[in-house]
Image (cartoon, rainbow, N blue to C red; front, side, top):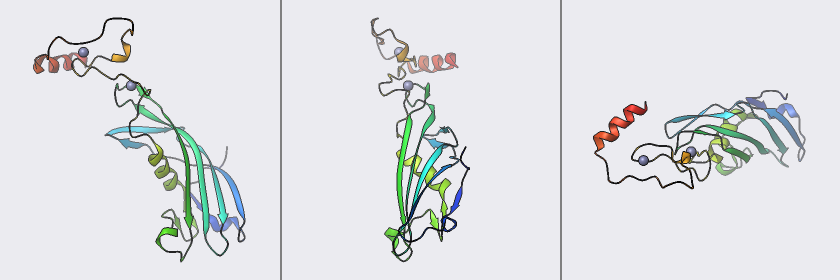
Length: 175
Ligand SMILES: [Zn+2]
Ligand SMILES: [Zn+2]
């Protein structure tokens, strides 16, 4: 199992100008909160591939790749969802290169790998976390899980808008 790395001293790699190195590491990614719900990263310490290149002149070009799942409640039916997220992120840090060539994750020669991995994962994660792309969700009237319906059976519908007090009562019954 590769070493768990939160921060990495790029200088300790002793790369010469133009030289690159591929590192296999693991990094811990903290749970995310999306739409008020908590989502964990599975595995919480994914294996990552980090390519470090020492640029000619000065600075580093970095590429981070890993895959992990985002686990938590489906945003439609509240069932279990675990969409796979593939991360392929790049950063460039070139001292004296101005704002655009300055990475927020590199301070002097120290790479904040944990912060970069977390941000890149959050950026690539779906904004709608679903158990499956065509999740039917819950009936807005009676809160029944519409995924459980027999597709060959009768359609689920309500004759008329029920009294909202009844809906409230049903909600309580479901708890
Ligand atoms: Zn669902
Ligand atoms: Zn219903």
